[in-house]
Amino acid sequence: MKQLAKREEQIMHIIWELKTAFIRDVIKVFPEPKPHYNTIATIIKIVEKKGYLTSNKVGNTHMYKPVISLEEYRDRHLLDVKKNYFGNSFPRMLAHFAKDEKLSNDEVEELMKIIKSKK
Image (cartoon, rainbow, N blue to C red; front, top):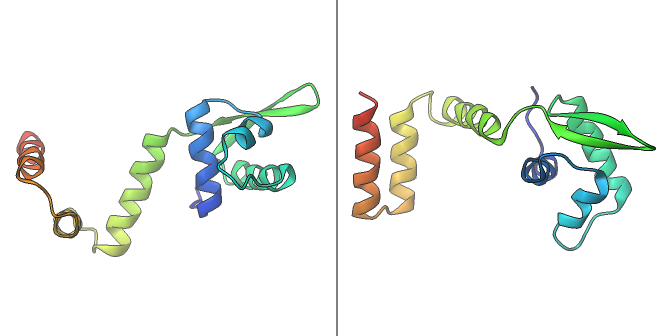
């Protein structure tokens, strides 16, 4: 699957939250300034062509449903980030975020527990 552009991803987050949606449903939830109906319709068609959405005709409109879950998308995206920006190294990626986030002692302990449980 091709990666989503920022606006496409924003629309997918709305549809993931709604589970199924018509274009008007997406527009209702969209933050201000709300894009025009045709703009949302065009972006949704692009996302559907990329394979992230499926649609069913309901009357004279379409209802859209995600093909993959948010969790699946997140996992794929994070694998790409790890590969493209951290030499496919999880420790390097984790070190980067740990350094930039200024983790609390509790957060460090939580991470250590997760890492130890994976051994």
